[in-house]
Amino acid sequence: MKTSIEIGTDAAGQGVRIDVQELLATRLLVQGNSGSGKSHLLRRILEESAALVQQVVIDPEGDFVTLADAFNHVVINGGDYNEREIAAMGARIREHRASIVLSLESLDIEAQMTCTAAFLNALFDAPREHWFPALVVVDEAQMFAPSASGDVSDAVRRASLSAMTNLMCRGRKRGLAGAIATQRLAKLAKNVAAEASNFLMGRTFLDIDMARAADLLGMERRQAETIRDLERGHFLGLGPAISRRPLAIRIGATRTATRMGTHSLMPLPVAAGDDMRSMLFAEEEEAPAMPRAALVEPEPVAAGELLERIAASEPLHADTAAPPVLDIVEAVAEAEEADAVVIATLEAMLDDPDSAFQGEAMLYQDFSVRCRMAKLRKVPLDLAAFRRRFALAKGGVFDPAEPRWQGALAVADRLPPDMVAPFLQIARAAMEGAPCPDDEALGRAYGSRSPGRIRRLIDYMEKQGAIVVRADFGGRRSIGIPELGLSTEAE
Image (cartoon, rainbow, N blue to C red; front, side):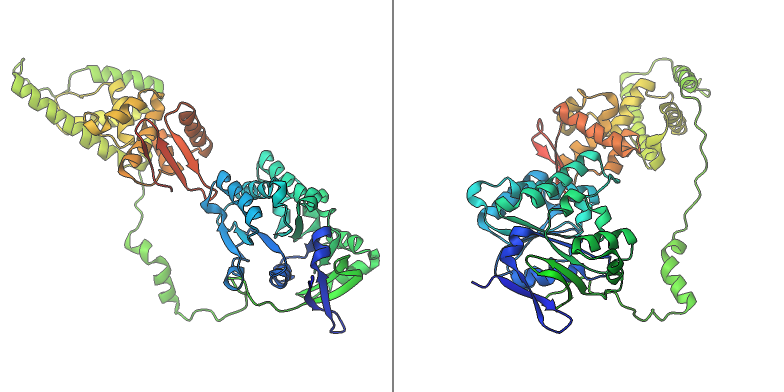
């Protein structure tokens, strides 16, 4: 059985081959600055070896999904699944020897690292009877095995680095052969880079990267300058699967290409200045933004005490001609009118997006003024009752007497008062079969713009048994309410 593939030509025009069997035992490291041709090189290796070995591609930018057009690769969009589902797929891939491309382009860096760690760990932990040979290609490996901490949490970085270390250090006995590519060797963890015995070094300009590349290729320091002079698509190769001495290689053509293509110059659009301006600013000119009057929030404590006293007092312009005692019919009619005014007032207040973040004292003052402008004889709710009704209204419940809300309100009553509104938003979405409210909507209901507080809010409600959360790597979240037997759609 033929085990070697041709990846390009040397300076004399002779074909340069890689022994895939040897590559599986000795692993591969590719380095080159952005635009040096790393992805093209990986694509050439993948295309030529597709019929020889199972392939698993970790693709952070979605560059390699087009392999499925010409070969039997299965594309997995990491954003569509949660951690448990990704791990299950990793186990099935080893069992069925399927070649796949794990596309992570829809995820942020932290989610990419978490997804990759779960996937690689599943490959690594497969049962012994499924230890078939597989070439595991990881593009932009410095993202998943960084040499230093970055913007992601330490727990995520450690998990991703551990999975990459297992792949490169211990994966060979399990049939896993890592082929990793990085823009900079200095950004790649040394424990991961050191396990490769085959090297393909492309163009790089920083002295520290040139020096490390020259060391790996067994070149003298003064020869490191040649790495800076390499053209796009040209690499220096060394290793038991490639050549025993550093060899200049020009990578050959590929049958597939990235979806983005190459970025080349193209003519600018031809449009006059006025036409371009009308296209850019048409919407703004049609609907100019109106400045919002500045609101000055009073001191919460002092204003609260004052407003409670105001609520207990009689209106300034009481109807002296009204009889002291109303009959039952008039009392019922007045109560119904007051309730209708309360609902309409709450709806009007919530039309202002800033109302969710204002203090209770200021909100109650606004509510009182609106009720008097509606010609109610007295404010129908005191401060405590208003606090409750406003929380329900933020959750989408304007009339708590409606039978359909009773189940949700029973669950909400067991939560702290400030969590009632976000819980009811979730419950309403579940009852209507609507998508799960996003963090911004829940933040408005909770009265906070902090993403961290919203995450802690959801965690607390889940720990209390009020909700059950399911989220995939794409950030789409669905929330179920066990007592109601309902769940929101994923969003």
